[in-house]
Length: 55
Image (cartoon, rainbow, N blue to C red; front, side):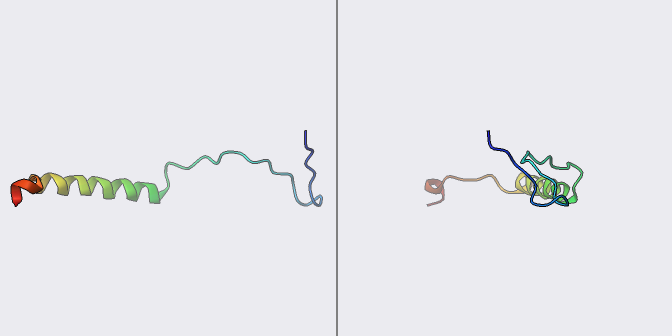
């Protein structure tokens, strides 16, 4: 197995690992709010017609 050593004592060895996302971040909350608003707009819209029916 490959051994990993720090470059200097002040630089610790950091092994790669999966980063856990914070669910309380504002960006994620804003994205959810925008999706909810879009869903409401779709409900208010007229029902979609097939292109052959329109022509």
